[in-house]
Length: 453
Image (cartoon, rainbow, N blue to C red):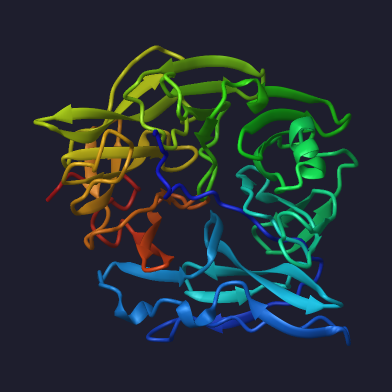
C-alpha cells in the first residue's frame, strides 16, 4: 500500500483575543523548557484545567546534542508561523465544566533576538489541526478556529461553533476575530461535519488577498477540498473536490511555517490501494487555472510547494543496486525548464522554497542509507538539512547534528534573510531551533550563500 511521509507538519494557528496583556518569560541560558500553567476561566463550574499533552513528557532540552550556532526555541509545542523577529506557537489545553470538556488554545510567541517568550492571552477556540497563513505584505496572520464542547469523543459527540477566522497582527501579537458571515467549509466538508457521525472536518487557510476580498481554503475529512472563496459574497470556486476523485484518494499538502509567496499552490494526490500513479497538481490560485500536472508511479507523496517564480520541486523514488532511494526533480510551470539541487547525500528529498522574495533559495533534506521500501519513507542513515542557491548552484549543509525528521525555512521579514528555523524530532515531541547563517559562516553579510570553506 502506498503511504505518505508522516512527518509533514500541518501548521495550525490559534490566536483570537483583544487584550494587549503580555507576560514576558526569560528563556536565556540554561533555563528549563517552561511548563504550561493555564489560568482557569472565572467560573464556579470549572473543576480542573489540564494539558492535553502531559507536561511530564516534555523533553529535557538540556540533554539534546549541541551546536554552538544552533539555539533552541521550544519543545512540545505546535509551531504556527514565523515572521521575524517572532516565532508563534501554541499548546492546547482543556477545562472540565458541567460534565463537558472544553478545549482551548494557550498561545505564545518567541523573540529570536532577545530569546524571550511572551505568553499571549488564551483563546477560547481551537484550530483543530488546521493550517495558518501569514500575508507578508500586510503582516497579518489568519487562522480558522471554532469553539468546541464535548462529553466523550470530541470527533463525534461535540457541540461545535461555526468556523471563523482569527486574525493576528504579527508585529504586536494582538488578535481579533473575523466572522465573514458565510459558511467557510465546502459543501462536502460541511455535510461530513453535520451528518457523518464519525468525525469532523478540519480546515486551513492557504492564501489571503491583501485586501481580504478572497482567500484559498482547504478542508479535509479523509478526501480534501481546495477552493477559492469570495469573502464579500460567499461564492466558492473549487480547484479540487475530493469526492470527485477515485476511491481511496488521499494526499499531502499544507504550508509548514510560512507561505513562499506567489500565485501558485499545489497538491499531491495519492491513489492508495489502486493501480493509479500518484499525481502532482499545480494551480494559479488567482485565476483558478490548473497550470501543470505530473503523474508517475515513482512520484513520492511528499510535500511539494511551488516557488513564486514557477519552480516546483518534487521527490521521486528510484532503485539503485537492489535498494530504493529518493531524489529531487524540478520543473518550472512558467518556462518549462527542468533542474534539481546538487546531489549531496545518497538521498535528496522534500525540497521547499526557503523564503518569499528570494525564490532562488531552496531548503531541502538529505540523508544516507536506503529507504525501507519503494514507498516514500525516510532514509535509514544520517540525515541533515541543506540550503541551495539555485542561481549560484552553491549548496550548504545547515545542521551539524543529525536530524530525525522535519522541515525548515529562512525567517520571513528579515533583511537580508539569514536565520534558519527548523524542526528536529526528539522523542515523542519535536523541538524547534534557530541558526543565524551569517554568524555561522554559511552566508556573507549580504545574505548570500557562501561556498564551502
